[in-house]
Length: 97
Image: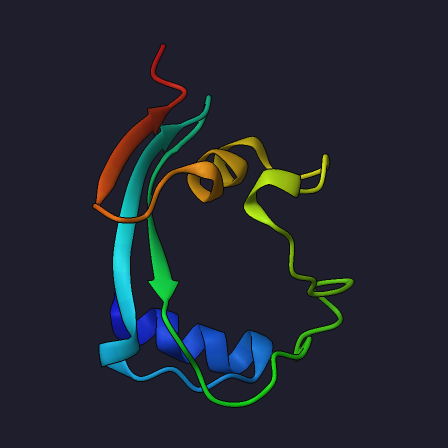
């Protein structure tokens, strides 16, 4: 999982992250009407290179936001994950009501 996050960060945003710079901060088990997913959320303490939009055909722009000023159009479960404290690993579920 960590190696996949490192690879995707390089492919999607042009940054280099080393294993000692990244950690798992949370897990969401989510379900919709046709499938279920387990999402892992990771935090990078530092990285090399400037962040850039390396896949503009998939993403309009990359932009930094303060956690208390996130954009309104975020996917709800992603917002929930970003707003959590990341000092300890957390777990949440979505769609199991």
